[in-house]
Structure formats: C-alpha cells, structure tokens
Image: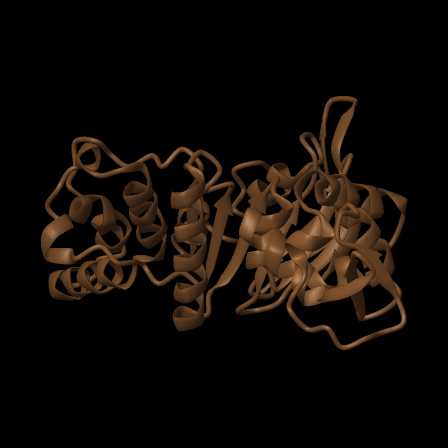
Length: 305
C-alpha cells in the first residue's frame, strides 16, 4: 500500500528525516512513535504531501505520490488530527458530507453512510447528525473526526496523535472504538503517537524513530522480546520503570518456571528477563504469587495508553 524508498526531508542544513525505507501493508495498523523531534509527524505528513520530501520516493498503491493530482490523491487518504478541526458552523452531517459531495456521490448514498458510520462509533445518527460541534464533548467530536475521515471510503487513513488531547477515560474508550472499527473496515492506518502504551495496544507493527532515523520496526511482541539496540531498550525501559512494578503486571498462574522476580521489582527487571524467556514467576514472602508473560506486559502497558 505504501512504500518509502530512501526518503529524506531537509530544511536547509537541518535534515529531520534521514534516508528511511520501509513498507506498510494493505490493511495494516502501522504506528509511528518516537521522542519529540524524532521525525514521526514529518514522516506521516509526507505521505499525503502536506510536507514535500527532499530526496527519495514514496509510493502509494504502486505509484510515486508525485504522479498523483494532489486533490485526487487526498480524496483517497483520510486524515485525523489532534486538533479535531470540525467546521463549527456546520452540523455533524454537513461536516461529514464534504468529500463525498466533491466526489459527486448520490445524496442517498451520502445520507446512508453518515448514518452507518455514526452508529458504528456509538453516536446515534438520529440524535447527533444535526447537532453542531460545540454541542458535543471532546471525545464525541473526535469520534466524528474519525468517521469524517472514513466517509469517502478511503483505502488509507492517517492519524496524527488524534487522542492525545483527550482525558484518559475518553482516550481509552476511543482506542477501543478504533480497534473495533478497524476489525470491521480493515483500512490501512498510519498512526502517530508519543505514547508506548497506545502504540502497543493499537499497532500491528510499530516503527520507533529517533533523530530522523528508524531504530526498529517490529510487532509489539518484538519490542518486548527483541529490542534491537540500546536506544530501543532505553526508550522502552524508561516508560516501563515509571509505570509498573511486577505485582501490577502479573497474572494468577503459579506454575513454577526457572526464573523469578520479586513482586516489588520494577518492571524494567521483568522486561530484561522477558527479552530472554517467555515467562517468569513473581515471588513475595518466599512464595510464588503469580507469573508474567510478554503478553501480560503488553496488556498492562496498553491499559496505560
């Protein structure tokens, strides 16, 4: 679906994306993550040419993006921002209609799609479609932002930290809604976040960037089991250490295995062991009180997202 071939982006002497190459498969939920200034948002915005690349090629559906008419290409790419950016003077229905109208869809098809998508994300169409954005909560507005991006049935959806401004409860609910929605529609989604928990929860694969370069592309399990280098280990470990202890992550299985940690050990200790073995015991007062697998760590961190 998308291919980066030795892509760089420079602003004068400052190169912010440095010779990156990777592919995103059709139907894949692909997450770009990294510290501030790593180049992840620039990478996302080069896909729909909101930022023009300096060197290399980006291919969309097998063609270089430079060969597409810009407006036509963007009609095939949904885009969801952190700043929800609904038109305040338009109803929810009118906000959602804009691209289908430009594509000259029949009125009935547009109406049916407005109703279908709003209902799909838990916003009763008859209740919400004629309301204005300021009559909705932040979480409800962001749901509208997501389904508006899906209105013209684009094969690709770009999401630039879409949930980061929301409160934790709304954010977790929207993550769950997005996963449920993706299970139904199977779009190719490229999602930028700075939050490891969110990346682990949502991504089929994760691309960790640093200073414009790719440090590792892998599944969530791959990041837990096989950190590629010290930066990846440190990036994961810093988050792990500040969020959990062994007792917070364990399950109730007390079947003995070879390696054990104390319940009070920071999760970095757990993480280091799980890079080598699939399961460890948790000990408290000299008794096994549970165990931890890689999936337990992923699940726990996902709940922090």
